[in-house]
Length: 400
Ligand SMILES: *Cc1c(COP(=O)(O)O)cnc(C)c1O
Figure 1 (tube, protein in one colour):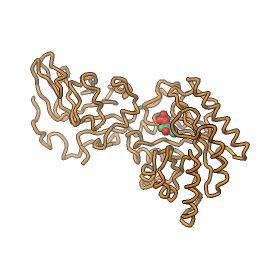
Figure 2: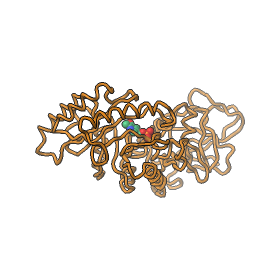
Figure 3: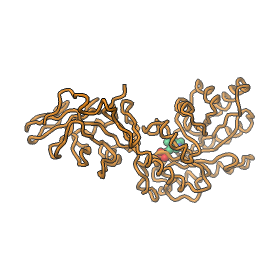
Figure 4: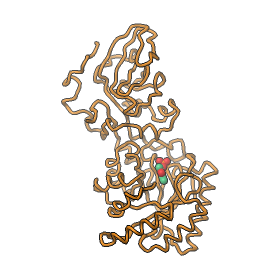
């Protein structure tokens, strides 16, 4: 069962504003393929996609067939592209549900064609595939010298429709780093080659896409006719890039205090006794731990918001619980909300700050928010009435 005492509040108004900022940044020449892989960076796949569908988003980028089919099950009818790769066993389901696939081997061209020949009678249209070319990311994508051969194989395969040509940018600074220009020029060289082979590029032909959030929010002469932002929609990054200042964070990670106790100077807290009370204080126990996405490395360094004020995390973060020193905050009660990142009234604890404190990137923090944490759209009650503090006695109740 999903815990009712820890939740991720999702500001769908912020999501809509971010999507509209993305739309205007993309301009009239480009459509938006919103990247919702990894459960929409931890925000909840179906919730984000259904909101985005109503905001004029052209389509969605996912990691694998299971995410793609989850979107179809949620009633999403727009184009869905598996950005990464699928294993052979997933191919048939993808084809049957009109899921578009990225291609980075000629083997895959052949195996898809074989499946199409076997299932042709059940298919409304030919599967649409996107040729993924590696211009410097070094992850998936065809090495530039192998790409022309696979393009030829694709053009000779009538069972498949070439729907797009893509690459992926490696630098988080977008065009503010010279390597991005290098990647774009390698990509352009391949696109010219494709045109020389008779490929018609553009909105009404084969889509050209290579721009992620960093590319979208840094100055670029040409962004192709489809852009693929992810993190910008969630309002997390790249807020330090020009034009991205209007992005608003969507997620706030919260839990409610279940236990309060006064401790004497010298009392140690949590595993390994890594924190000792320097004076008499009051400790709150909060039912959310590293399984739920609170990084273990926040031990003794992180802080949270309680009643709009910052309070330090004390001792080690455990699997299910975190302890917080609220000795300096007045009137804290069992049932009060604790915010691990995001907004708490007019106070704000940026997820970027949490990421920095533990030496990671904000992507990892929102993606790590676990399955026990309920995703709750802002404005909806986080807890059912029967779970409100007071209605349910909390074991080992408050020290007042
Ligand atoms: C994740 C991903 C994106 C989105 O990147 P952001 O930095 O979140 O904007 C775009 N394209 C591909 C291929 C990706 O894997």
